[in-house]
Length: 295
Image 1 (cartoon, one colour):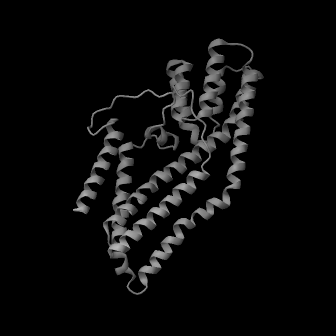
Image 2 (spheres, one colour; image 1 turned 60 degrees about the vertical axis):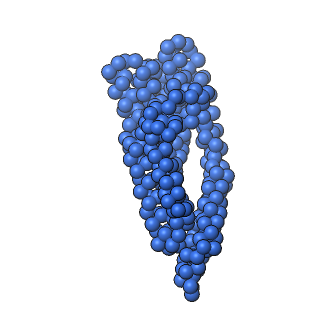
Image 3 (spheres, helix red, strand yellow; image 1 turned 45 degrees about the vertical axis):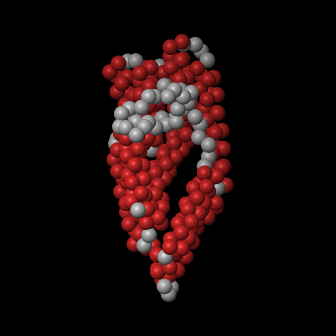
């Protein structure tokens, strides 16, 4: 009876995740839910995929990969420990691997963008003030020399500009593709200067470049101090896994895992390992700058 209830709960959870991603549902049904207004809405899965450079990946495919790893992880754990509860726990942990990998790729892409923007803003300042180029010309010229991770966004914005000559729409495309707070601020500064004119664009861009440069340097310093702790975090997984395999190979260790008490102990141990892994990652995670000009 207990395995049946657990299987039903897992099926309901999978259905809720799928309908939320595929249809935007907020309840049990597959219909779109009523949107709730928030002052700063959290990024959805499409925004996260875009920030990771996976904007062409269907969110439903991403959910399918997560579900497949859940099944594989559950089967491996069941073959090792011979119980339903440890298998479900290990399956959930395995399902988090692509999410964590995607998050790391997203963070790496955002880090490269953050490091490139101070130089790009400084070049924009030089081209618009010293060389007398227009804002669109300078923007797309700089975009052609941006890091390769940013090229698709600048190319899409340039195509929009060539078709419409509407800088506002072009910058909106750029902001949507990049999904980066610094890009939002730079685009809004350029748009205001383009629409209102004035002679203070140089000072505004200089101040924005200096602010972004300080932010990048501060993040680099923090990450360098965390290098040792991030390496030590791997032992949260390696040591318990090695001890579990060693215990299974000694005497009747496998039979002990399959006993009722052994199943409970294994489940508690898995929960502690996962909890320590998640807690260590949360402690070392640097705060992200919120997007305030994303619309």
